[in-house]
Image (cartoon, rainbow, N blue to C red; front, side, top):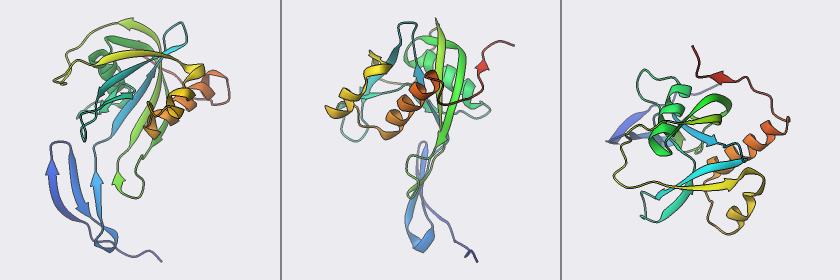
Length: 178
């Protein structure tokens, strides 16, 4: 038998909300978003460095962001690629949908592998210059061990992309062609 849970709105800031739920405990509601593993022909992932909101320290991430109203996850993925690294993908492979903070948030994060990258730049909303760092997909683990790569969703996306490329994960491609 499931019990009814009362949800109460507490606060909102730009793109996230604080609510209370089970046992009056706080949780976040965050709009659905995307993380993309953009891989070039050399087998390198085009990762980004940008400042962490909570500390201002530069962190290693994947391109990504929220899905705008009226956008599909794949459209958001290609928009974010163009805004953050100046490329778009001819083919996107959906890898998974994760909730990075299962107990403490409602936040669907769509993971994609992007292939056949083509130069294409769109203006983003960042107020800082995003740096690009190319990392071989086959050897990203030292970045975890050194503490440079800490985001568990990024790490999961990299492992899933590698599993897909090795044939151990099967997904259907989404193309950017009509």
